[in-house]
Length: 523
Ligand code: ACM
Ligand code: ZN
Image (cartoon, rainbow, N blue to C red; front, side):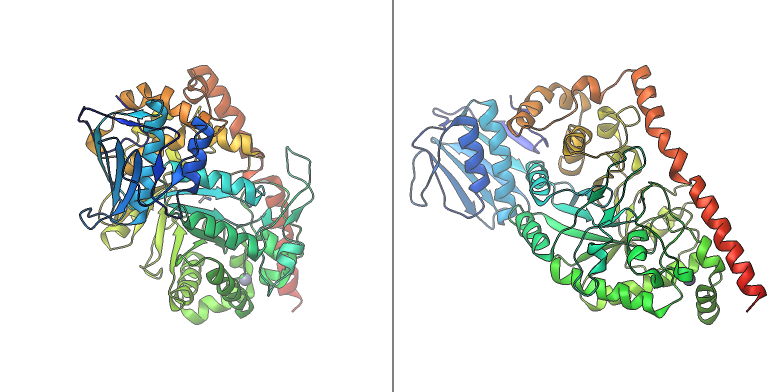
């Protein structure tokens, strides 16, 4: 029996006379996305598969056919000493090749006559990497992309702008990367950090993803999480504050001023360049953790609220997100945002903005109301999908057994890796694997086939696969920590509370308030 991650819908061993045997004579249909598969076979079996479109024996035949209905589905048949992979589109064939890698590994190059029929459960299967808190090189990103493709993930959400670092070159605003991509140090890690992606780098990564049938969604997080941008262009903030690129984690109180036209000009200019770099027609606008301290005191924000008849700063955010969304739509793109904390009333928030449902706010029934009203969402519940959370909070079984709510308007799942406490790729891999295997299975495999016991029983083969890619995954003992160990990890992770709503925010709030009082007294 084979243990494939994610588990295919149907595997039938037909047990005919002759199976497929990988050897020096094996050939393969010539198509341009088989390079990585051939490299894998070379590494694992020291065999160089010949490319030959005409061969009919000992061949891996890749074939497009209308007989397959789903764009991402495939059928894999091992018969008469050949392996046939059929897909309606190349996406499906590519997924068939990912399955074939696992079959070859587990059969040691030999595959019995068999038949696999497979298709994904959800059309959106995402992973997010935070490049803001720590910078990852293009080479590191590409390696991660290979691992995502192996798991049949089809969306790479790239978090590119943060308080602690602006990572994407915007030609119209060169300071964003000259200055905004550098911070002097980080709390609990006293080293400076810097780095950014040129537009050429971005295009290279996008192309790399597309060859692996992965769409790329850039995140330009606004109006909050913008301290790095404000550090470069102070006029974008309320009160034109002069700040440094943030050196501490946690929610910042200085955000883009929603009352000034210059802010919208800046945002639209950045979106113009992002849309050129990211052709997949989706753009994530953040919208999370935008505290309203400054907006409440800012004359520009208050004036706009009055002019537009906005009853609260929350409504001002809805006005802001909707206005940006209108711009995004004009460009033929669709906007995504986090469903941030404290949403009470969404009358003014455009219904066609997709929500990345991170579960921050599930008490007031707003998510259900929004779904019923037609808003589209995908499921990114912080527990279990935030992969930076310690295994002591979110162990492997918890990820697997979480039942994501799904429906007509809830069209997929995404696992984000925030990186405040992930300074190295080694740690990134430790956090992500094997949990991503569970996420992939939830996103891909048929509901009725899911079983944690079966998944766990197949982990040795899954770890073999990860070993083939030299992944620094968490071992079973680490991914399923004991109660005591888990509690210790959770407590250690909770040190972030110390600075999340930190003392410096309180001091800053008091300073802004005092200055504002003085300004009102002496106009
Ligand atoms: C978030 O967790 N900041 C969306
Ligand atoms: Zn303002």
